[in-house]
Amino acid sequence: MKLLVISSSGEIENEAKIITSLFEAGLDCFHLRKHKLTTKKTRDLIKGIPEHFHNRIVIHSHHNLARKFNLKGIHLTKSHIKKKYKTWLSIKLIQLKNPNIIITTSFGNIGQLFEKEHRYPYSYVFLSPIFDSLNSKFQGAFTEHSLKSAILKTNFDVVARGGVDENALEKSNDIGFSGIAFYSCIWKKKDPLSAFNSLIEKCHELKIPID
Image (cartoon, rainbow, N blue to C red; front, top):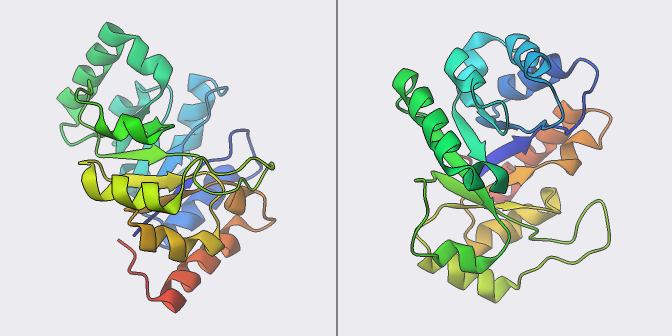
C-alpha cells in the first residue's frame, strides 16, 4: 500500500520544513497541489525542501518546474487534458530532461477506469470521493462491491482519495487500492508530522505493508 500526501491548498507557516519532516519520516510521494500559488512562490517552496527529496514530489500546476527540479512527476487536471497540444508539448520538453517522469490524473467515476483511450500513460490515478468526506456531509460515491470489482478488472493502479483517514486504511487495503492519498487528516491537525506517523503506526498494527 502506497501512502501519499496531498499538500494543503493554501500557504501555511513553515510549510517546506513540515514537508521535509514528512519525507524524513518515510513519505515516498508528495502531491504539490497549489493552483492559486504563483510560479515564483511554488518554485521557492520547492527550493526550501532539500534537493534529495525533490524526486518524491508530483506537481499539479506550473509543470515547467518539473524541468528545473528533478521532480517525481506531474499531475494532469481536466484543464490540462483539454489543452491537448500545449500539454503534449510541455510533457515532451519535461521528458527531454527527465525521461522517467511519471504522469498521474484524477477520475471521478468508475467508468473512466475502463475508457478505451487515454491520451497519456498514467502511472496511477486518483479515484474520488471514496469515503464520507472529512470536511462535509456528502457520502462516498461508490459501493465496496463495485470498487472491488473495478479494481480487479482495470489496468490502472488506483489510489483512494476523499474522506480518507486512519480508519479507512483497513477497508482500502481489503478493497484492493494500490494506495491512499491523505489530505484533511494531515493538514487539519495541529501537528501534521504526528498525524502522518499515526498512519504509519496504524499500518503496522494492521499488518498492512507500505510500499
